[in-house]
Amino acid sequence: MSRALIIGAGGVAGVVIHKCCQNSEVFTDICIASRTKSKCDKFKEELQGKTKTNITTAQVNADNVPELVALMKEYKPDICINVALPYQDLHIMDACLECKVDYLDTANYEPEDTAKFEYSWQWAYRERFEKAGITAVLGSGFDPGVTGVFCAYAQKHYFDEINYIDILDCNGGDHGYPFATNCNPEINIREVSAKGSYIQDGKWVETEPMEIKRVYNFDQVGEKDMYLLHHEELESLALNIKGIKRIRFFMTFGQSYLTHLKCLENVGMTSIEPIMYEGKEIVPLQFLKAVLPDPASLGPRTKGKTNIGCIFQGKKDGKDKTYYVYNVCDHQECYKEVGSQAISYTTGVPAMIGAMMVLTGKWKKPGVYNVDEFDPDPFMEALNKWGLPWTENFDPVLVD
Ligand code: NDP
Image (cartoon, rainbow, N blue to C red):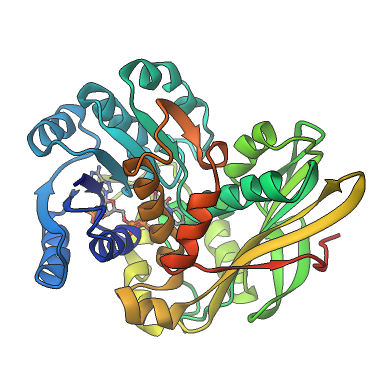
C-alpha cells in the first residue's frame, strides 16, 4: 500500500502516471497535482477503470510552499514525484521536509532567471533530509537517471577502476516538423544553447556551444552527428566513480534543428532577458515556447528510435577493459503503449522505477542522493521489466 503524489501533468508526467497505473501493486494510490487541473483530470478519465490504482487529482502551484504543504497534509503521500519543471525543485523539497515525505525528481534545480543548473542548491538539503529521516532521489529520468545507474552498474560488476566515460544520447526520431523540441522547449533550448563542458582530471573544461562534434554509428539508428554538451550527471559521477579521468556527454542533433536554432539565437528569440512588447514585459524564449509545437503533440507523428547509453574504458584485474551499455526505444511503440513519444517515455519510466525503489525500501536512505549512489541491480532489473531493456557490448567502437 503506498500513495504517490505526482506533481506536473506534462509529457513526462503522462508516462509516470501510466506506468504507476500499470504497477498498481506498488502504487495503490496516486494523486496527480499540477497548475492546470484539467490536464490532471484528463489522465484520470483516461485511466480510471483500466487500473487498480486509485487516482485523485488536485490543483497546485508548486512555486507556493504553503499550498504544497496543505496538499501533502491532506493527501498524506509516501513519496512526491516531481515531474513539473526544474524551477520548482526547491519549493517541493521544502514542502517534503515540512511534511516528512520522500522526494524524487528528474532534473536538477535551475533558477528561472539564470540558465545555470547545478546540484549545489539541492545537495545543501542533505543534512535536513537526514535529520527528518526522509529520502530524496535526484535525477531519476534517463539522463540524468539511467545513465548514472549504468555507471554504478559498470563500477559494481565490471571494473576495478573506470577512467573514461562517454554518455551518448541519440534521438533518431523524426517528427516531420522543420523545428520542434521533444521536451519542454524552454528547458531544452536553455540547455543546448549554453556553453558545453566536460570533466578532465577533476576539472571542468568549458567549450563554446556545439564546438565539439563527433559522428557515431548507433545500433538500430545508424550514423548521426553528435555534439558535446554540459550535462548535470557529470557533476555527481565525477564524485562517485572511482579512478575517473574524463567524462563527456554527447547528444545528437540534425542539421535542420541546428540551423533553426542558430537563426533563432541570432535574432534574439532564445534570450531569457525580459523585453517590453506593446507595454507588456515578455521573455523572448517563453514567447517562442508558445509558438512552437507542444512536445506532447509530437507523439503520434514521431517515427524512429532513441539509443542512449554509456561507453566505459577502465581496468579490471590489471587489464584494459571497455564496455558499452545502452537502451534502444521506439517512438511509435511508446505511443501505442502510453500515448507519448520516446523522450517522455525514457524519462517517465525511470521516474516510476526510482519511486518504486524508495517505496519498496531498496533505495530508502535518509538524505539527498543521486541515483549513482544506490545499488544499481534492482533498478537494472526493473528497466528490463518495465519497458526499457538494455543491451551490452564488450567491444564497442570508441569515441575519439
Ligand atoms: P512539460 O512542460 O511537458 O510539463 C511540465 C508540467 O509541469 C506541466 O504540466 C506544467 O503545468 C507543470 N508545472 C509547471 N510549473 C508549475 C507550477 N509552478 N506548479 C505546478 N505545476 C507546474 O515538461 P516535461 O514533462 O517535458 O518535463 C518534466 C520534467 O522532466 C522537467 O523537469 C524536465 O527537465 C525533466 N526531463 C528530464 C529528462 C531526463 O532524462 N532526466 C528528459 C526530459 C525531461 P501546465 O500544464 O499548467 O503548464
